[in-house]
Length: 102
Image (cartoon, rainbow, N blue to C red):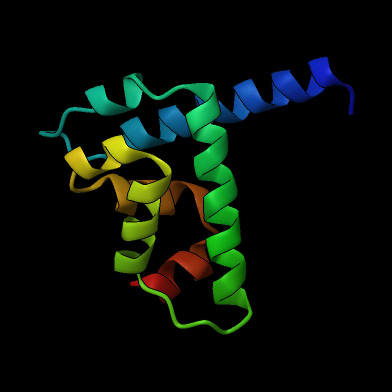
């Protein structure tokens, strides 16, 4: 895929990601944190989530707490919103992988 096409696909993934976060968050919670998320941050989070999911697929016993700790290392603002790890995992992980983390 050429650079321009790759950029467009990444932007669409980013927009869909933010939209899903808004739909999944509890109604009383603000998502201001995610409005400040940049495309580069999203791509880092997406890559981290993919690597984390692959570890679970290969049999490592990892939890959502482990995901949250590593997510904060990847994207520091996640620390300021308690549900960020859960929301991000739910949006980016396959359903069966997400359920194994719970």
